[in-house]
Length: 186
Image (cartoon, rainbow, N blue to C red):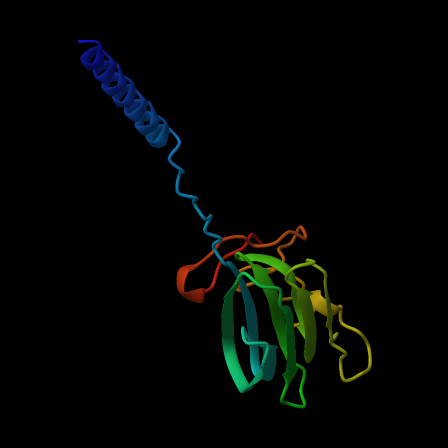
């Protein structure tokens, strides 16, 4: 009888130990580690000019050139990596031409403006540091007619390019799908 009692106690002890170990194993199960998904940032170039050459750095860090652009042009880059973006626009005619050139991050202008005959912009995507330079309009008599506010719009600082500066010096933030034109206050 005593042997039966000892065997019964051992079985109970083993059964309780097994249940205890199983409950610890279930409670201590490692959770799956969720890897956060980093969505890429969208950078873009926007240019509006007639008869101009556009040279830019693409997503593969290669220099590309568009010859004799006429009208609006845009190029988007989606990346999670650092890039040195560069945009150079030059007119291909001897007469003055207005150039609107911009580098945007998530549809917001980082650098850009209206200039004449040439524009050069650069922007480092990781540091956020950039620079830009634009040509100014000089009439045939040699006088400056006002840089970025002169020309055919009679000094009105309206623009049809999204991200362009408005009259108060801010930027047009209306985004148009398909890279179309946007309106601004006069």
